[in-house]
Picture (cartoon, rainbow, N blue to C red):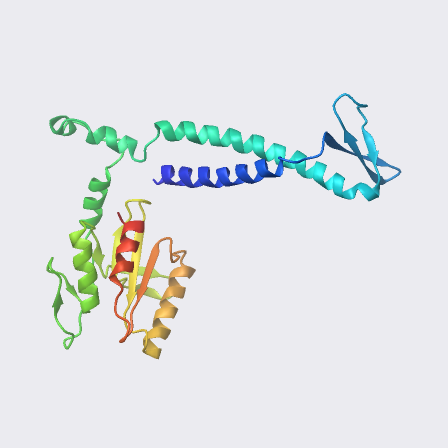
Length: 263
């Protein structure tokens, strides 16, 4: 998953490197550097085309020329390797699509699909299977306000309702407060759990809505630390949004995170 996107990123990185070394190679000294030793001392020689194979000895006062020749050789090797890799990546990108195995199945006639067992489940099949796994959600206190999403799910805050309704409007499936074990603490209940279409892994979203409360903030920080100790890191498999009594939920940020990680 996401291989094509990663290849584009790698191609961009290599293009930047190529541009840098090509600039370095515009004004370079003639020939190449040979390094030898005499009586335990390192010696440098400039080897030019058509001259002696051993090259011309470069004394210490020519150290800047020595460095430029060494840099030239290095840059030429980098340029050769980068050019080769760019050509390979460009070739792959011309003919490669993420989810192409899934696409073969989906392009079959619906009646034919009924007769076929795909080598891999499609994302829709995986999400349906994942959504059908039952779980025991976290109980509500008797005095907790009753806040219901448009889909009929009870949540704990108005902000969570706004987020849940947005996910539903975008067709993003989720589990609300699905239990997760974080060692050594035990079971916690992430606000939202998703099955990432991009990575195929579960992705957790915590909305910390009372960060101006010192006790709440302390607990939130501890929980984030627990995620990290269990190999679940913000920006990878964990999304965190924050809110205070004077700084309400930033739905533009929620939309950006949804697009980046879930769609």
